Image 1 (cartoon, one colour):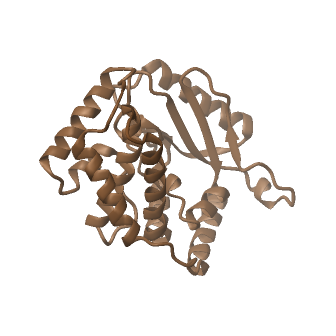
Image 2 (tube, rainbow, N blue to C red; image 1 turned 90 degrees about the vertical axis):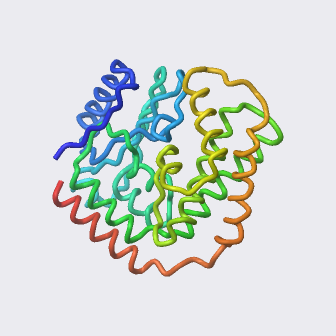
Length: 268
């Protein structure tokens, strides 16, 4: 079954360009795209009027490529054209990154915006991610990402950049409230809905999101107090809850991903 989930807010002309580019990639590189999604601020739930279209995809090459002794590139990158940014990873690279706990890949699987894809492929890959994903590594990814952005923001900066710390902080809060899960939603409004949060924080986030949605330049300033306090508190808690740990045993994770890889390649 084919996947397709494009919100009405996205410009039809830009979506058509992405569709055409994905078709050219499949034909020109001789690959099959298992999943192509939106990965930027549009999928995160806080786009501005001039937000780029960040299409990311996972592709499967032909069996002859994987059976060759000569390695080929495991990414497909296209030039930036206007607002379009279209790039993808080979399935083998995807498996390696999944085992390493790459949270970016996991977010691709959770994107609410899907350009194309095979439902069985995504569902099976999500199931695999649930089995393989390392909750601790995912949480530390959000902690490092968010803390770095918060340091760059400092005592004041572009208000739009508050979101780059807020979303990781909200993902950490979601993980705290869902102790049995390793994969948090990537969509900020969904994170808000699925966490118990103070009313003033929710109101401040929604107000900032609304401002961002209707202006290209939000200006500079300090983050609203409820948001700043939340971000710092979540990073402090995560620092204690998710300390640096020794590398885990990857035997089982490697076996599961190898089985999945062989199944998809031979099926393709």
